Amino acid sequence: METMFLISILSILVLLVLSAFFSGSETALTGVSDARMHSLEKDGNPRAGLVIQIREKKDRMIGALLLGNNMVNILASALATSILIKMFGEAGVFYATLGMTFLVLIFAEVLPKTFALNYADDMAMAIAPVIRAVIFIFSPISEMVTAIVRWVLKMMGFDVSLAGTGTNIDELKGVIELHQGPEKETQEQRAMLRSILELAEVDVEDIMIHRSKAVMINADLPIEQIVEQALESPFSRLPLWRETPDNIIGVIHVKWLLREIHSNNGKLEGISIDEIASDPWFIPENTSLYDQLQAFRQRREHFALVIDEYGSYQGVVTLEDILEEIVGQIDDEDDISVPGVRRQPNGIYLVNGNVTIRDLNREFEWNMPDEEYSTLAGLILHEAQKLPQVGQSFTFHGFRFDIMRRLRNQITLVKVKKMDD
Image 1: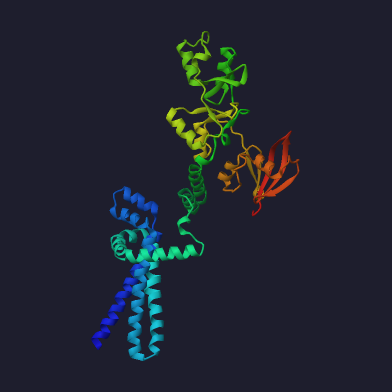
Image 2: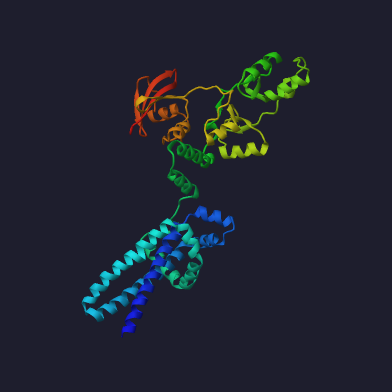
């Protein structure tokens, strides 16, 4: 009798250990980092590859682990109830319920799951071979259980086969937002990572230098004036036009021009600008930044001319413009600094109307929408549905906008204040 009692107690302890194993395994395998597992698999870690294989069929994994966990918990509770009924009679049911609830909660649920949450990756790789065997053994029963669950849910109007419409891009964006660290450094890193993911969603028209700001040279000017304008320009590549600025005939590189002058012994006479210029490269304004970046790499060029659907010249885009969308503003000794945003006391910003929404969101981690417009002035016009007057104020998207200055039909200066500030 005493021997049977000891065997029963030992069996309960073994079942509690198995319950802890199943509980911890479920937490570890569901909380494991997919990114780290893929990285370790590429480095030749076979356990990481096994974890990925197990997670590819989560319903089978969860079904097998829950089946094993419930079996050992029920069996442990039944043994404890049987022992305590023999010892205390009908009151043993109460004692067994109270005791097993405490033991299962502490040692088979909270403790192993807490450990698994903190060491999910390492634990998942350690238990992967055992879990694969458990899934194989329980697969007939777990498949049947999964089929019953899917059928019941479908009868209730929930089709789990259609669930999970989120993309990997959405998951990456969520992970980026969770990135924490030193405030300024972390903000810059988050902005950079967001920009990389958004390259395929932004068109070149959103970042191009508009034709009104682009420096161009009339190819019919005397060579002396062309050289003078090229040297005065802060840009190394300049579009050439003839008869009308819409008639772009080529692109001149300042280095090519200087090389030609050097080969001509420093003389300008006899130099033909048409022979030096390269053919213009026209791209549609709705080309995504990702596609344009790939095109720059393939053609080994840094400069393109942007046209609209009617073939009209709209502006220029460079490789540096796209890189600045990723890493932020890149200034060199030739850049012209024109501040578009001035920070004022009390959380107020004076912003030029032509500053892009993307630059504001990147710099200050705001969340202004930029789907329908690219500049701050465009946002105000879209929301106000009219041309506002100087002195008017608007509140939308969590910001207050005060129109400070207007030049004819252009909003040139706006005072912006975030409402929660």
